[in-house]
Each structure stands twice: as structure tokens, then as C-alpha cells.
Amino acid sequence: MRKDVTDDPAIVAEVLRAAEFMSLAVQDAQGLYCVPVNFACRDGVLFFHSAKKGRKIEALRRAEAAGTSVAFSAATDLKVKTGDKACQWGYTFRCVLGSGTVRELSDPAEARAGLGVIMAKYAGSDDFPYDEGILTKTAVLALRVGQATARLKLA
Image (cartoon, rainbow, N blue to C red; front, side, top):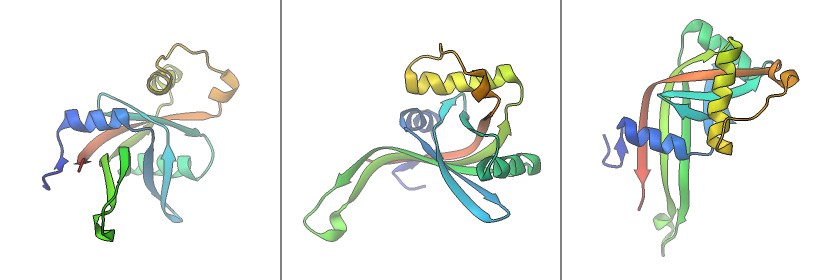
């Protein structure tokens, strides 16, 4: 493994906590599909939501039914690194690349708990009322991380 890459669970979790969004990669009948999503991580599970109709949820349901993995990436602390020569330019960053199995949370209490994890990340609290009309159109998903590595390119 490269010196700036680690599979240390504590470092992976810290980068995932700090990242503002993740890119989720799935495959469907049309091919590969990558989409950015808001998410939150708790105990090795990434929670995110989707509309109950559309390409993303159909691909995720297909992956769940087949037991196939989906991939994800998340990055934070991105800063342009300058230099005197073109090849000295680049980025410093912390990121996580990984994969795991996804499950749609069909139990309403479990789905609300997943949304609560997301709200706590972005709003600092999970104590918010939910619009029942919107909840009926919202799928909440849990991605159990099976494999993940963090890259810390800090210089």
C-alpha cells in the first residue's frame, strides 16, 4: 500500500465524517452511473436518500436484489497546490474510496433513524419534524462498507 494510503478504520471514519458529499457509483442496464449524494456515516454504514423513482434508485434496488456491491468516493480538505512548473501543481486532499452492499430501509422507523443520522451531520441535530407527504416519496438507504481506504495527500 502506498505511504499516503491507509485502511485504518478510524482514519476512514474521520474522512467520511468531514466530507460534504459522496459520489455513488452503480451499474444498471444502461451502464455505469455515478451520482453525488448527501450522506452521513455511523458505525460503518453510510446513510443517504433518494426519490423512490428514477435511475439511481432502480440501480440501487437491482444491486440490493443481486447482492452486488456499489462503489463510493468522498473527499474533503481540497486545496490547490501551486508551483513554478506545471507538474508541480496539483491538489492536497483527504479522500476515501470504497465499496459495500446497499439496502433500502423499508421499515418507517428505521428509515427515519437513517434520515436522523443525515440531519445530525448537516444540521447538528436530528430533532426535526418530517413532512409525511415527502417521506412517502423518499427512499432511505444504508450502504454497509465492506472495503475502504483513505488517501491523505497533505503536501
